[in-house]
Length: 462
Image (cartoon, rainbow, N blue to C red; front, side):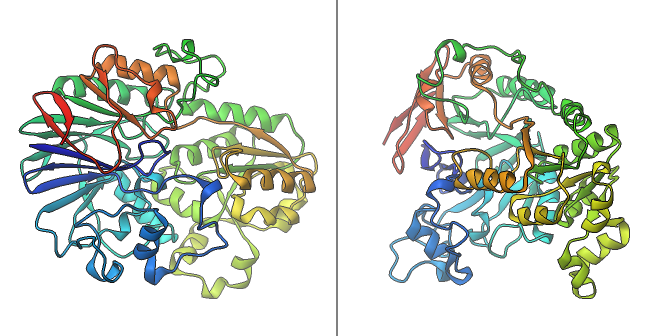
């Protein structure tokens, strides 16, 4: 029979790892790390050991002890975990998108196991690998084509594109001879591509499925989220940015209200946000200045990328010894130094990511503004968030928030569940998955490590 095993992500944000098995074949999705900055052992001061990553991650509980996934030489001595070389079945891993909580540990998977992602995701991963933000470990990755089924034995997988705040995001329809499962990945209705979500719903209903595994990031307890706020509704509240394409208008409005420099903090895996910062700069008649890592992503993924590169002290001092990709960018795009910016700060919109925050000590920030736009640290749950505010207070830079989140708000989650109308709903990727119910089917809250069987449209523990 068809088996499901849940290894991660049931009551956490990310870290979702689920196995679907049929006979001696299985697919696993995703393979990320739980996002919990306040409880992170590897906090940036305790540094990972590159030669012992798998052993350390297993010991720290960052990755689960799954048989047949990790290389023999990466496991602890006398480990009870079967290595990939000892495992008798066939495994494939599916990556829904390239946020760390869905792919952060995929480099630890044995190179003999194929790891699939969409073509757009693979293109983005090549850029991330170039700038040193690839997954730890050395291996290659396989491409799957959106809406085109492929097989792992008798398991048929179909990637279905969805809208999230990263390119290449998809859901997976997974079918075995005994039933089918729909895994949402991460989704939103209020982004730039709501048509993708409607297509996802239509295609999923056309294919049919027995189990819906649905993300629930924005769900809260009853004190924080009333029953009324969980009523299915596809419309957008007035205080919510309707689409990503409205971000430039909002940013330009903030910039036009100040006389000093504009500084922005984004997550540079959000390519649409990079594009919209460039558009905002154009609308506000400001030169957009990107950090060189973000410039590499923009150069590879945007058709029109009108920006300058921030010429940091490192670039100035090491120009002849920089990696080839940095030298190539410096030849292609104009640069600007902090000295030039300070001559006329109101003419610039400058990127500054949190690890580079001390660069702002050299910038003339008088009468300026700091635009926090889904960059890290994301919120008060991250200890670094208070530190960011301390720094901005010290240098006297006003902070404003301009957001367009990547996850469906609660009423949109319920709308999607109602539209999909699953026989069995498994909500996860949430601190409060129990808040989401199907309109006619049953809610099922699994436990870690238990083996569940799927047969005749029902699921039960072995």
